[in-house]
Amino acid sequence: MGKTKVKKMLFILSKATLENVYAAFIMANGARMEGIDSEIFFTFFGLEAIQKNKLKDLRVATVGNPAMHMPTMLGGLPGMEAFATKMMKKEMEKLDMPPVDEFLEILSDSGCKLWACKLAVEMFKLKEKDLIDELDGILTIGDFYGQADVDGCQIVYI
Image 1 (cartoon, rainbow, N blue to C red):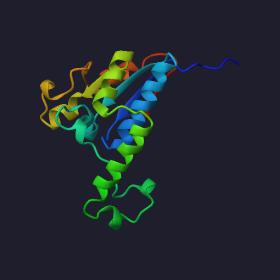
Image 2: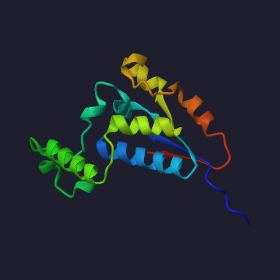
Image 3: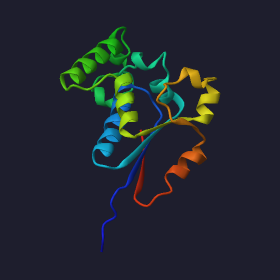
Image 4: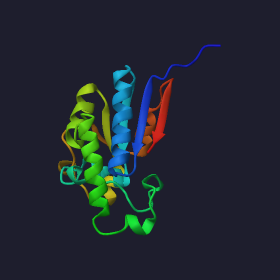
């Protein structure tokens, strides 16, 4: 029996915490490097990753994040989020990871499609001019699911 090869990866990014954004970007970029089509659908708070005035200020979630291995109260202390964000950015730089704005350009240039969710854009009263220039468009969720109508397509929710 033959194995189906992955031909397309669709990522749904719903939260623009630094760790979620980099997870989606790294996986989408990795797909492109393997010759696999990739697309990212930014919805709800994930839209912050493609808002011109917010994408440079994304932070690491310290409260309620089990991967932080610290009590919620400690994660909520003043300055803890800023400290964790600074440490993560420092580690990312050591690995030559580009900042969010540059990574979006790299993804777009590689052929990764970048989509904003129409419902979320309307809900947050955003305009297309508020979003990055590399955006391929604003889609309904139905339109996005239409992008998945390909043999060998996988959808990953982040």
